[in-house]
Length: 337
Image 1: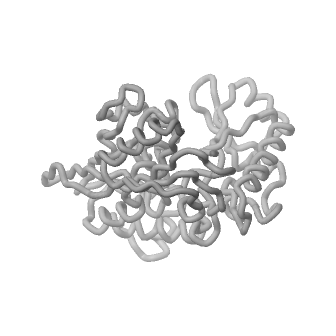
Image 2: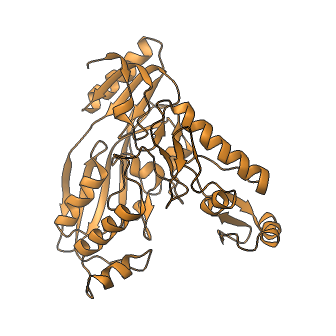
């Protein structure tokens, strides 16, 4: 294991802020991962696990060891005439993995095309798009349990998946994901009813869609609707949709009839954070080279700020305005270090 000192993290996270890691290492094997954890412990340092850096904001120097996960590989475990089971390394690029499956007409992941990040991050957030949650395709997750100090295989039930959530962000820092098992279909049930997929297919004259044509439609929609993190630093949706009680929802609906929300159960509603932020007037606001994206107001964009604290301050100003106007606390959907 090679440990580097005082490494800028600019190229290792999508916000591209020029923050420093006191110590930095890249691991490509499970053995190297354990070695990194033990090295940090021996040197009385904290450590931070980093994937593709698509869901994190560094706001200051990290004085411990940053361990970048690059455990790659796509392994076929089982195949029948109707389905295939794959084991995929946590370090694999998510978008590349989905494209690999689409090219082979293995269905299930096509609606999740072009989402930034690595395979290991997908279960943590239970990434979702265009009517599909990644948990629908996951069989199990291989991880290192830092409390029990042992390798474990977590079944889908163990992962406790819910809306943009899982055991991995409910118990942060406990599990380090090393691989994910997926079950994909050779006879997939295609999903075209969400977002503008159906409209794009119709525009292209496609009446009998395939895995490939749906993936192409999703890629097209993402290119025109979402800012490219390679060009404009961002980490996708910065906030979660807040959960409120039915009583609070009823009160707010009277005061703000256009409020966008949906019921979770008989007692709770989720309000769309996008609506709250727009209602507070943040669309198009640009401060210190940081702004909300014009098309996706939930996406905070770095247009040149070198320090993560500048982006954090912008996000906190949004949270405060929502709290002042609606009495609702927005929760960050990304990790802030």
